[in-house]
Length: 292
Image (cartoon, rainbow, N blue to C red; front, side):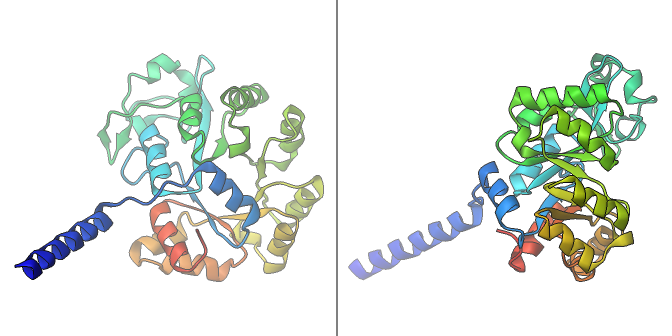
């Protein structure tokens, strides 16, 4: 009888332990760990979620940002635009047609007017609305690096963007992405500590950027990638950003691991990858020992 009870207790504890393993969620990684890896582990490939993790939720929505944080991505990429009444909001396109089904440009509506339109996901309306940049910053604060894809097109908007970073105390956890490296001095004039990510369009621009000082990341491109040039970027203390968007993400969608393997084989000194499949990329990198 005692042996039977012991066996029953053993089996029950085993089942409970197994069940705990199944339902247990991975521990959340905080911003401190992400920044430590970002600055001290160049061998780690950092994962950037394009327009936030939008496979389950509308792109650039608060729900997609929450999902990006939940899955443990390092960076959330968000597009910043300005409304008719000068509110900074998150929206990729110049118009709101694709994401809300409504006509017109972001800049032709006030923020209050935009709030009337639900964001679409797979063509269907959701409970999500176009978020303000401030809402996005407060949600990301302490959790994830924010890649600010700045599309507001004015220095006044850039100053307003910086003011919000200062107000929300999130300067340390952003990358201010600029398409023209010549905009860097203006931003550095606002704050020398502001992390800036310049886009390099060719080898000559890359050399110019490296001569301008140290940037945390240089956004490179397959069109001019060479191992020697990317090594120069990394030796300067910057990370090399490359996009999986388009070709490599399409390969990945068709055949798991194929797209990410092809990208890293072709661009081996890349150590930041932006993708539409951040959760899949995280799993892939961890299998290869390239992520925490």
